[in-house]
Length: 252
Image 1 (spheres, one colour):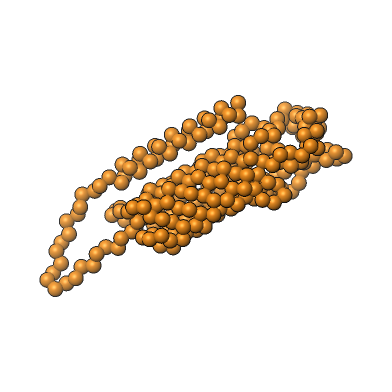
Image 2 (image 1 turned 45 degrees about the horizontal axis):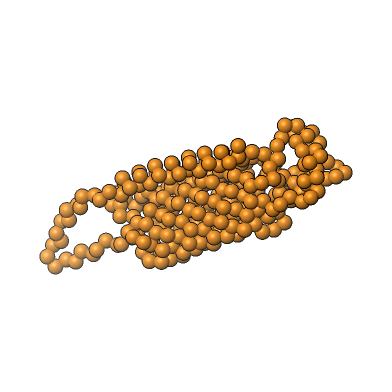
């Protein structure tokens, strides 16, 4: 059942990406060249600045799209490796970009301890796990999230190879079956905070397109429950899943 949901999510994601790409191709069709009035004799007319961010002559704001793939290794007490495939779309202006995005984020939690497995085997899904847990299921495998975020990006130059900074902030939603088990407990909510800054280098490959290589940090934060042998389930103040890794993206 979980695999079917993952496949459906990936198919939907690919269809959206292809649709947006087709729209971008339509918008980027060659436009008629506007006639230029000749300059008076003796006057010099400066050439317009060259920008690899867009060839759009309809103003200072123009559409921009990204496809990103990243992987990160979990660090800290609660470790969960991450793999994400994201698509972001928005408006570029000068050296900046503002947009929104979504995608698929897969967590590979650290294996649960023997104590947690014993508790799940003896009390799994029962009321011993706290209020409203009589029909709750627990997943000891991977977890699939769908993030939705606001993306802010700034390039320190857009004509040649240049560094950039990128910030994604939003929420991510658990779509796989069962609560996500990590260490001696589990993530209780199906909605988490999503925070992912990246620093890297932008490499232009044309008048509009470019490839971005970056180092990224991912944060997923929400409530966390763990099972105590004497006290039963206990809710901690929260859990933060930290991961560090790399990300590559193609922009058009």
